[in-house]
Length: 250
Length: 250
Image (cartoon, one colour):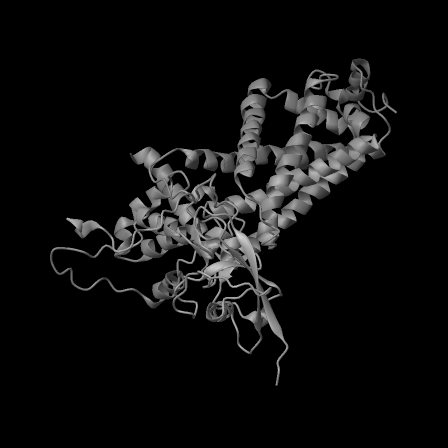
């Protein structure tokens, strides 16, 4: 009768981290979607935004206006923006905050590089998102509509970049977003088993670090080019003059 | 011949799973070759605190005393490691001893680490060889495969990798690096591979491999130098390939 009783009553212990819930939930798909959206389309957009579109500002107001006109001429721009940029960024950011909230950063006890990078990935993501919200609001949703008047683009950016605090916010946003993306590529490749070996991950990290410097460098060059050119018009009439070509602007 | 050099230990104590914890300080005479376990053995011989109060011996798990059984893991000066291989001369004094923070305390430094056992059962961390008849000898394993598998087989279930992981906590219920690495070990074994699909499928559940944030504390803290991050990368790749493949096949 009493054969099933254990010789010593087990200590009743409660609490602790729950074991693996095999077959339950769909957090795997959300987490992997979060990881994927960071690369495509959000990362791909950042790549285009910094290395192609913004870099065209180095060529001056006319080249910049031409690039903006090209982007505005793409078919179904509002759909592209909504599903290619805004919704993916919103999902990536909001789910990212959820991930941040659930992690317990412990760089105090374990101050190792990888752990610092883990913390930095959360902070850079948060900073980049705050910057992106502001940047989208002022550039896309308020002031002169650049899709209608691409010629006003250079001047509109200048109106912010010439204010030193805003210029610094641009620089901080650029560095945070570039780091988040560059290290994010490394994390993506490590987590998805694309670069798995220890040596391979080390080599790839150098490549990602180099990519960070390229992004930041080109971004800074674009930003300074706005400050090194004379102030451009930000009204509709001036915009047409910029687009009309040289000789019509100062 | 009075040796005045002493060792000071601050130990976090707790009488039972529901009691509040408190600190006790001990001062021991120094002698060569001391480690944390031998110090606690000395306290057990004369359980008197630094200020002369009689107390009880410290409760802790330990067995082999040579870093192969995995029992005596605890926080030493805030960091997860094995007490038997923690040499007093290499530690900053006063030496702080605390139980793991993410596992329920049973008493003093002894914690309930059965969550790892539950996780290992969930991923079927074994080679299925039980049958009703003699299955004969297993397939041959090449020296290369043996060399890759051996480091993984060194896991001693100490749970240091889980304690140090920022993602292993009550909110996530993350499975932890040790279990993921065991999945890799048994999946690469030619006979163990029979359960490969089930193991990978288990890791897709809530608290599965997706919760890894790649802070890499696990691989830094592992007393057995197991390539845990490489295991997470490789198993992560296999998990996503199987999960995406099943979307089309199943």
